[in-house]
Image (cartoon, rainbow, N blue to C red; front, side):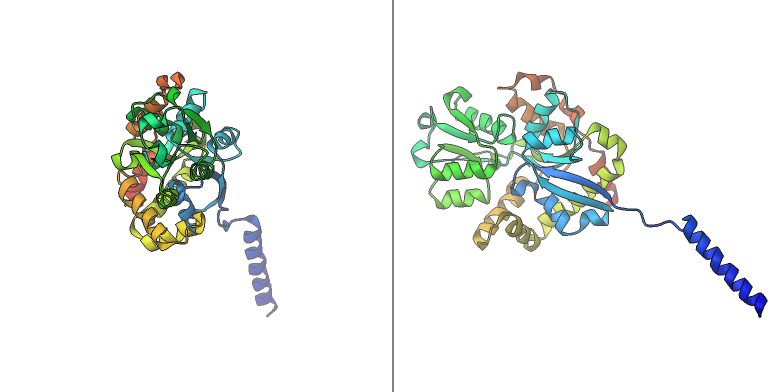
Length: 328
């Protein structure tokens, strides 16, 4: 009996030693990272949906999403305060011209998503001359799109007074208040513009012109050090993008939650805009889309003319997801 007890005791002690030695591996801890997004708009919805649906967690990622305008998000990315950013191609190109080394790993808005709304009394190129036009900054996507819209109206940037207002919500408020004559905008904000009697003077979204209206970017060095993390972010965002396209009810519930849209007609207006006008070309990063942003920006920032758009594109993560069926 004593011998048997000694055997059991020895076995118990051996198991304890195995556990203490770490021979049975513990589950890997989730990788923590922060991704910033540059505007509180539906352009960045897949990132928010991926968080709410738990897709980051399913890829063993502990992701924090943080609103930072591009002028703050890019320095934070370079300094390592955030690991990834969701910004437009124009902001990324401007940063690249200053020495940053960024890579686009997934496109969220592959066309210009902007409509240009004006007060009725400014509803022509001649009437717009000399008036104040809202932009987010002198580097952002709305700025590049404004340059393109002015060109389509036969106007030069010097024909108007461009006013940097930062957040898109500030641009929209200024237009509704009448303190600017024109502003870029898109749903859900443009639903209120329409109700207020404003005029859609130039609709770039309807033209489906290529652009990186918004996309997910990492530094080249982070991608080289953490390719599996980047792949997990892309996989999660692609799952959410698929949901946005296929699950109207879920997408509209997320729009309502994050952008304070309660009216069903406004939700439908917003969802239809993105599903019909914006998302069609797909999430694969394309040099031609980024080059369009560079070309528009070059009119006021000659430094970007030397940028190699193809060198800022990394298609490998979306292609990898496609092979595994994640991007379907």
